[in-house]
Image (cartoon, rainbow, N blue to C red; front, side, top):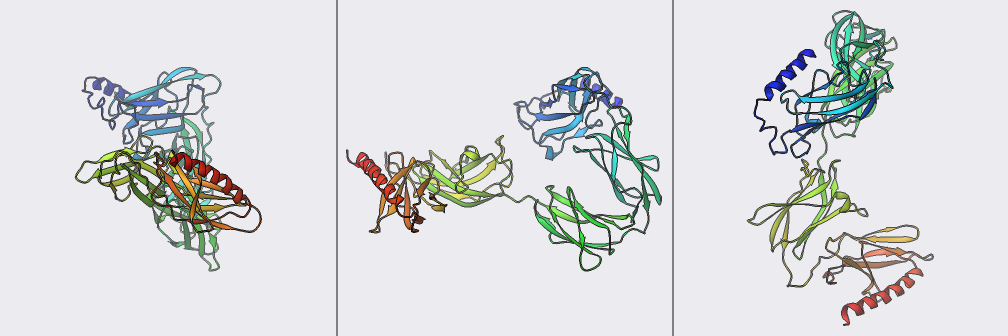
Length: 548
């Protein structure tokens, strides 16, 4: 560690004489500094979170950052820091990494936690933490570390197997085989560590694990685990999966053929673990697994154990190819209003980071223009789960529209683009407002109400509700401001009546045609009172609109 710090110091001095144009470029994909976040206060020995963000000069997170960072605590060289040998950002970090409970201090005072980029010393950041004497520094041998697999006095079917255990989070862990240090790793954010022994040289083996603090001192050692490597363990024959190309959350059927009468047969893939049960056919073990959230090529391991405690591990017995389904658009509709292109659509497999929609449009022979919608929650109709948006101010022409998703930072989300949608804008006569016809009528009936709803039209200021009378004609009954209408059902005989809707433009012009009608349960009694009130209101509106 001292050599690394010395190298960092020399690199920092040397870098002071180098041009820094790449660091201070205006490009938001170039890292300018590191933002370091830690609690303002902590106690001695208390593990706390440490968050590091790679920021551009404008303060945006640089999601493509893949630099190597080192963490040091000034004036407390025995402090525990995450990844004391350096941490390399990966694509999955998206420019931000939180080291859960990865930082702790050994003495009282105010300390500066400095995080630096190994290759570019000027890219750094720090946080100050005031440490009180409320806690105690870890005492050698006091930290709990446990080997959870394999079990003590177990027999492995072959010389290659994994050693799994738990200890404090984000800490260096060493594995000892027969008293000799064999492997070293780091526990994850949950405190889990895994060692893969490629080949055990002896038949009888004693395993133990030790956890180290930030100054590389052993602060805990596990109990010994005795493992015998031999051919006496259970025999694995084969594994069958009902599907190998899946998405996260998919149910997968599993069949394992192995030695009959085993005590346990366990199958694991990443964080997904399932225990199989022996079928009516001896030696056939079956069960189901839910595909894990991890994507890519995920190995499927099989662990067998018999009544004598002898164990066989078949690593990578099979492989799952896990992919996230692409976002898809359903019921995508576009219509021309006066200088506006209005859209309604539904979305399947919506990404968790979807925040807005981007409408990219190109007129025939023209240049592309991009427009962002409001936040998705503001343009979604909760009655039918449809999104509605429009692009105003379009000159008469044919336009090709492509809709895609963007995150909260305005960055396009891959694999979220729709197919091209052609919209032809034709302007109405000057001064006249035009509006499209209403569609998508739906009705939901409950105990005492029927709720009629329809697709929202962004430029509509109101909607007029029509009901078919005894003569078979649709008559106006009420005007509403939202794209739904509630009808109270009276008790008595069940009754159904036909309703239709027209949209109203800003100058009170209605859409050219009634929407397709739908039959709604109304019942007797209350509807007549509703009609009377509505007809009076409708007559008043009619007089105000047409009698001047």
